[in-house]
Length: 314
Image (cartoon, rainbow, N blue to C red; front, side, top):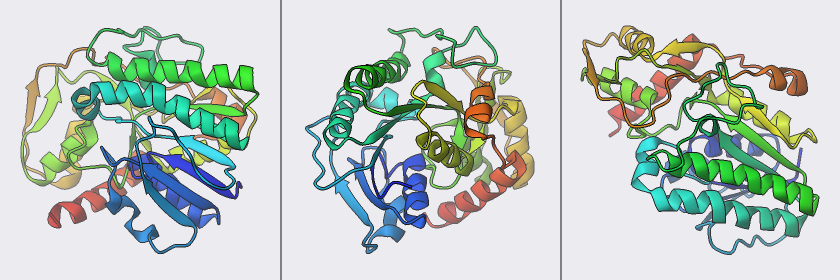
């Protein structure tokens, strides 16, 4: 395990779980976040720990961290459609300039580098399930293009640094992830459904609800990322749960689990919303000996407990 790790976007959902995992394993963690979508509450239990440092900073600016750095995990970016549609230019900048600055730090420190990429690089896929060899079906000028193209550019930049500067890099294409520390106003389907169900409000289903997603519990994603960092594999690797479910099925499952009286309300499908999403994780199985181990029943129970606590604490 590396001794000193920099995590950009470390106050966010997955980033804060990574901070916790690395600190538990004895590493020193430097968390960098401008808090545009991150939350210090996710990190509160680390303050006072001499192996944890928080720096409020925008990584699109010149990035300097004193001392040695062994590994950089670049998670800085809005990740919810609500966030990146509200912050389109900032999203493009952190995917391009932010990735460039973070890679520059990796080059200076001779550190390993992992990019948090996304299944959104596949766009509205014509291949199902999606393999890493699929180039995607992305609309570069559509509303969602600000996120999709930022991540696609970031992947290209990472590979250019790997090939031209001999940096050991990794690209994790992360599929829909859920768990504690998601924001209740995140805007993604699971936080929306859970928050609405717990308040007996209508569950908002976009379109007819036949579109599919594949949800992976955050602990499984963290484990996959850590295993990827221990390899010398530079090409993209899908990390996600291939257990596919329709949005209608998910809505009914949340209503049933919460005992909610919420009805389901259908509304217009957002522009560019993918019709299907399911990872082919053959590469992760073979390369990392990894696959999700937390099933949806267990993962949703843990997530619901978190949301109930934080909803009552509002």
